[in-house]
Length: 443
Ligand code: ASP
Image (cartoon, rainbow, N blue to C red; front, side):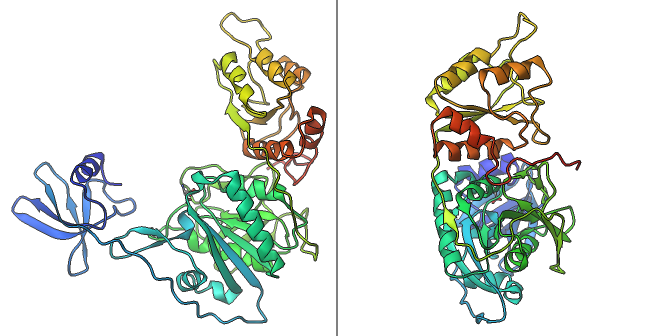
């Protein structure tokens, strides 16, 4: 994005990146295609691609005038032809595309970012993938992951099963990063007896940026899908500020914890399963408690009840807000500290307890599950009077160390199978896919 001033001027003149424009300043006029602002570039310098192919920056000042000279043509990629031949000595990895930054390709005339995905595209863009495995590819959706829904998860799960049944050795799912951990958790609950690894991968920075992480992330994900022995749903993403390794995270125990850093994804309350060095492509195991590859037949269980809310408690939260949640069939509250919401045990005159409102939900057969808004650590409702009151009214989740997102998805999954409060409680507190760690690791 350019500065607000430039962006609103461009908008008022209906000028978009890719259009040919004239920029006049003092006695000089420059003609060229408007490019996107370069990474870390000055927000008040327009970048123009001149007819001779060079880019220049023109500092936008008070006397700078901009005119549209020619609308840019919409540019479409022709998918590259897939030339790689199947090598019987190599494993086969199927790459399914769900959209997001990692699946986008940059058109270098205008700098526009296009969703582009086909096996040919992949091999053409990342030839080293072909050295690791025979690559199959299919585009499922072209969406940003903030637009993903449980309906998308079901499509993904079915496609994963189809690919596994076709005999591939591993699956990679290219996905936007915003909700990648939700999809990872959902697939972890849906796919039973996985015989091969299913790896979700994204990129924090698109391929037009010098600091893009899409190559190391995708290569490492394909390495993990082709060669690792872990037959689970996992997330493979950049591990540090350098480009030298990625982590392989357990699907129910990972979360995006930074808006923009490449090492935004971290395992929560557990160690990652493995480290994958780049460019060496070596897998170093960090844990041994995983499901191994086997010949089992994968099963799909996609019964979800999506009428579940996830909310944060906060100072001053109103009981009326909690009451208004009765239109949902289940509620997850991300509680403060050890897992609290206000119950006012000291009868403070300013404080409003939400305990009765929560009790009313539970009494109307709406389970209320607690998760930690601190993200890291285990819930403990035995320490303070607040926690003991919450336990007494039937809040579920004491001593669990799930993330709020995993708790939400688990509750959707559990409510897809039963409405009986006792069964909900039993299923919620029984591990289905490693979502609650047996012991607290000192990390
Ligand atoms: N908002 C984008 C998405 O989640 C960011 C990304 O692609 O990583 O799809």
